Length: 87
Image 1 (cartoon, helix red, strand yellow):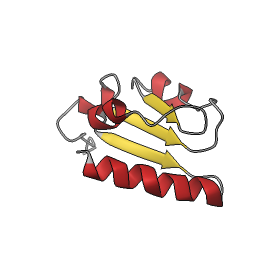
Image 2 (spheres, one colour):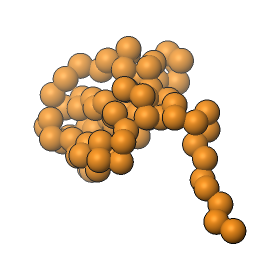
Image 3 (cartoon, one colour):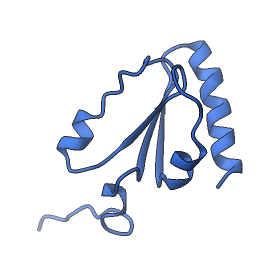
Protein backbone atom coordinates (compact mmCIF):
# COMPACT_ATOMS: atom_id res chain seq x y z
CA UNK A 1 0.00 0.00 0.00
CA UNK A 2 1.43 3.33 -1.08
CA UNK A 3 1.37 6.09 1.53
CA UNK A 4 0.99 9.72 0.60
CA UNK A 5 3.14 12.30 2.26
CA UNK A 6 0.87 15.01 3.57
CA UNK A 7 1.88 18.62 4.05
CA UNK A 8 1.13 20.10 7.42
CA UNK A 9 -2.22 21.89 7.12
CA UNK A 10 -2.78 20.70 3.58
CA UNK A 11 -2.05 23.23 0.89
CA UNK A 12 -0.74 25.98 3.13
CA UNK A 13 2.70 25.99 1.50
CA UNK A 14 1.21 26.44 -1.98
CA UNK A 15 -0.25 29.89 -1.28
CA UNK A 16 1.42 33.03 -2.62
CA UNK A 17 4.42 33.89 -0.47
CA UNK A 18 4.02 30.91 1.87
CA UNK A 19 7.52 29.86 0.81
CA UNK A 20 10.18 32.54 0.97
CA UNK A 21 13.60 31.94 -0.51
CA UNK A 22 16.14 34.39 0.88
CA UNK A 23 19.44 34.71 -0.91
CA UNK A 24 22.37 36.76 0.16
CA UNK A 25 24.34 36.93 -3.06
CA UNK A 26 22.29 35.91 -6.12
CA UNK A 27 22.15 39.50 -7.43
CA UNK A 28 18.48 39.15 -8.30
CA UNK A 29 18.65 35.75 -10.06
CA UNK A 30 16.67 33.42 -7.79
CA UNK A 31 15.93 29.89 -9.05
CA UNK A 32 12.17 29.77 -8.42
CA UNK A 33 11.08 27.86 -11.53
CA UNK A 34 11.31 24.38 -10.02
CA UNK A 35 8.92 25.33 -7.21
CA UNK A 36 6.52 27.11 -9.57
CA UNK A 37 6.41 24.06 -11.86
CA UNK A 38 5.53 21.95 -8.80
CA UNK A 39 2.50 24.15 -8.08
CA UNK A 40 3.96 26.47 -5.43
CA UNK A 41 3.93 30.28 -5.50
CA UNK A 42 7.21 31.15 -3.76
CA UNK A 43 8.45 34.62 -3.05
CA UNK A 44 12.08 35.69 -3.10
CA UNK A 45 14.18 38.17 -1.23
CA UNK A 46 17.73 38.90 -2.36
CA UNK A 47 19.32 41.04 0.31
CA UNK A 48 22.31 41.75 -1.93
CA UNK A 49 20.09 43.97 -4.11
CA UNK A 50 17.01 44.75 -2.00
CA UNK A 51 16.14 45.72 1.56
CA UNK A 52 15.00 43.17 4.10
CA UNK A 53 11.20 42.91 3.85
CA UNK A 54 9.58 42.17 7.20
CA UNK A 55 6.16 41.65 5.59
CA UNK A 56 7.46 38.88 3.31
CA UNK A 57 9.15 37.22 6.28
CA UNK A 58 5.99 37.43 8.40
CA UNK A 59 3.79 36.02 5.59
CA UNK A 60 6.04 33.01 4.92
CA UNK A 61 5.34 29.64 6.51
CA UNK A 62 8.71 28.29 5.34
CA UNK A 63 11.89 30.34 4.89
CA UNK A 64 14.89 28.91 3.08
CA UNK A 65 18.13 30.88 3.22
CA UNK A 66 20.77 30.28 0.55
CA UNK A 67 24.34 30.91 1.62
CA UNK A 68 27.02 30.70 -1.05
CA UNK A 69 30.00 32.29 0.70
CA UNK A 70 31.21 33.50 4.11
CA UNK A 71 29.92 37.08 3.78
CA UNK A 72 26.55 35.69 2.72
CA UNK A 73 26.52 33.44 5.79
CA UNK A 74 27.04 36.42 8.07
CA UNK A 75 24.15 38.24 6.35
CA UNK A 76 21.97 35.10 6.58
CA UNK A 77 22.49 34.86 10.33
CA UNK A 78 21.22 38.44 10.65
CA UNK A 79 18.16 37.62 8.49
CA UNK A 80 17.39 34.49 10.53
CA UNK A 81 17.61 36.42 13.80
CA UNK A 82 15.34 39.18 12.44
CA UNK A 83 12.85 36.57 11.30
CA UNK A 84 12.69 34.98 14.73
CA UNK A 85 12.23 38.22 16.64
CA UNK A 86 9.55 39.50 14.25
CA UNK A 87 7.29 36.44 14.34
